[in-house]
Image 1 (cartoon, rainbow, N blue to C red):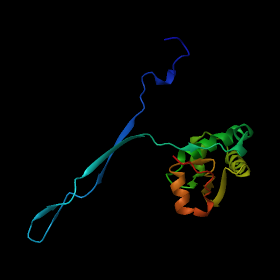
Image 2: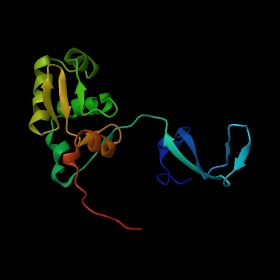
Image 3: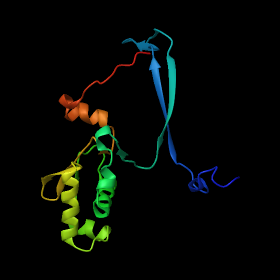
Image 4: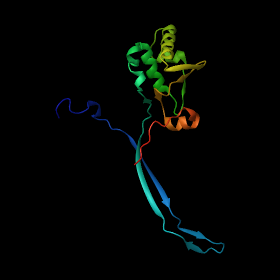
Length: 168
């Protein structure tokens, strides 16, 4: 195969998927009376839907129009902390717990002062906001781990806007 025509990261690797088979049953088959007699009511129709989900966990990074240039504006240390936060997010959570000594060690950041500056930078660019000691709100318009629609509808329904309707 000619160089540059196929993604080199695919050689020897496979995307692990989980096959989800969902059976839906429509209709009623039978009922029992008090004497143990069976009455057939209708034929059951089975609809089988198959879908695939990825085995690996993932975090979605969003790119709204007003965010252009953000990554270029961040310092290298702030960018590292941003990636650390993205990979540390719990599922269906809009905040992250950070142990600063752990973050400093994991990211090989020389001083706590440098880490504090990076966190302040992420706050300045509205990527995170201080919640309480060691906890930071994450901006779910930039980054989220899970089903953002379900999360917003359950926890922040007033923050949901139906921007368009598609009829099929």
